[in-house]
Length: 352
Ligand code: FUC
Image (cartoon, rainbow, N blue to C red; front, side, top):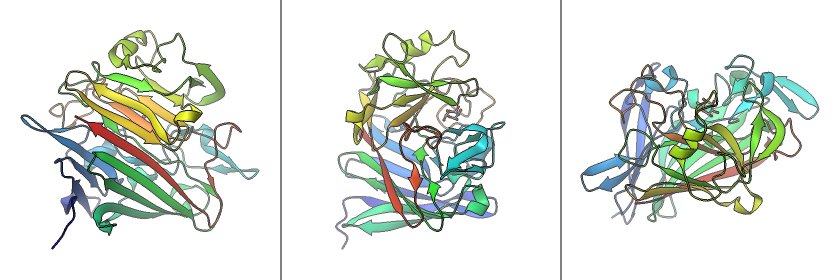
């Protein structure tokens, strides 16, 4: 007889590029369910029970094909490196590696053959008496252009205090390489089509200055007295309003997490109307906030809004190390030495 308090299941999701895509689910004692699909190890569902049924707190699409037909990385696993690498050129150990590019001259989110494009081997694995979802993939340098081969496992653990723990474990198999994965999770915690009524708090005194390709210049900007000041709980809608004079008309920005918040709560998103919140823990120094400013009705098939994409439909909160970190000596260390294993964790704790 099973004594697990977390229930696990797996089921056929759909076919994509002649491969079966599998959906794995974990449900805890509070009837919170987390599901992931093997395409991109994508977080497909983080749903809670409500008075009227269930609400999924993350954006998704109904079909695998939708995920790569859109440029938005909807709640997908991202790697080897989240964010942008200038000119697709990775400086490492005194050499420069030319990577594949996928945004003009830039390598974005691991490039055109990054983690999100891969079909991961998934299985339910029991650990300490509870089931977990484990996705495994060996990312080959010959496949994505990064130096060396990287053996990667992404683990989903769900606790009975409503925390989803996402762990990335990577081993550099044969060369020094870089590892800065993230989840491109778009949250919409409320019952509205947009996140404009949400509040956001981020433990960040600074954010990064960008050039016109959204590449970091290396300068840190103080958030104080700007729309980037989320040090106290702040209305996201008001902050987005203050960004309307910019070309982005919202946030697509990188916050430098304060040292004392790392490995603790780095940010909290809440919806005052429903009293739902998610707190994010991360062991690294960066958080990208992307408020889906450029979603349009051509970005079809979002499950939440009856198939239509609309601006501000969700907010992507991407916990990671500051991007392009081998180009700047104060952005943190994303290097894995040959033979070395590195582990990173991102936790989402929901309250409702
Ligand atoms: C964020 C942004 C990018 C891109 C992507 C979908 O990571 O930094 O600009 O739009 O999301």
